[in-house]
Length: 499
Image 1: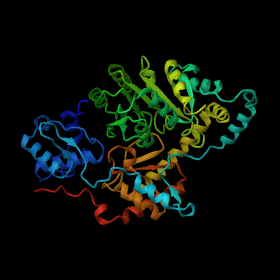
Image 2: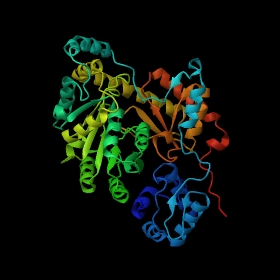
Image 3: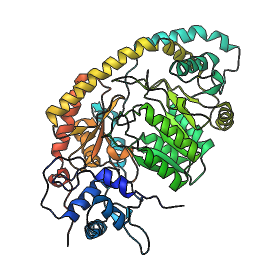
Image 4: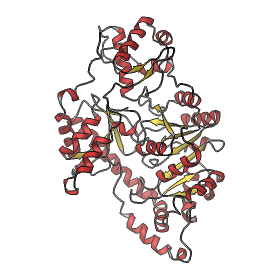
């Protein structure tokens, strides 16, 4: 397996204005008097902590990077040496330097928060849970189940187990795709127990143990676990939030697919969870071309597609495909209610047949009542979703304004949809913050939950799905937890040790 390498051009682009006092890419601060090698090393370290230089990936050669940056090779050599001494690079004789994290740096942001949660009794749980990006059910949910009950009798004379899904629901789903610009036949739809179930079925069919699966980074944490559970290995391709609409690094996806021989990718181009970023139409067309070139199947997760809060959605990513290279999964859970575990896979009939074959070893179908209720909700989706989007917009504004008041130094990624903010912290303390937050009445999902190998310690996902009063209280509790961190933990990145 070829070693994955960050090109000098890509690293130069991501470093941005690295010579300046604030070493974060894109800073407009005045030029610093620090040595150039130190400024370069600190900027590369920030990229590592933010997940934009993934662990295990090789940096460009000293000569190539020096040429791309317009500096002496000695500057790059000294910067690499400093990163190596501090545990951020690993170099072996005759091979490139690969990205690492120092010993003692947290690699999994899930464990501290989960262990605290597990030790609490129900009456001790914090009042505000910000680990879930999901809304309460709409008023139409009761009507949906009443309608389902009315339609149930025609199914009672059967055995009730339909692994492909009842026809009325498959017709309703196919009709929605067609209306969005992707002509679809009901036979191209497999109804599942949610999008996560559909993803797992697809991974069972499309991947083998030890195979690579490309993921956008950050991404949905349960997708990462699903990839690992089938024995495959997630390969992160960092998002570029500073490029709205074009945040997906398509050159990086193409390069990673070729270098790792990945046969499958899992991407969330419609309001990426957690960032809320949206892939534009031009990028979708190029993504389809990359999938064809590399013979890679792209699993497109559209679970958040109904949560557009600004502008209009482009056509589905699969609308740009010429063959079977794009497979789509969707869900009623994010659109209507998390308790409604109904999802679907849209694929060609050959793949649907394979999925049915593997499904029989896992379950025998989705509950008929839930499917019929979903038919009703889809028939009334325009009214229901318009109201829910208005609620989300108002709650997002409340969350943003309260963050501005309580934590003005925190910065939110400018997403245009979804159900959460992806917030950048001044220091890499996300896991520590999530661990102490329950003591202040709030549960948080630490940034590393949404990445691999310890990335995103400087980020936190904050959903805006709760009532506005809860969001205000929640932010105040988060601010109290942040203030309670030890001075060392709350400080920005400690200086690199120089000898």
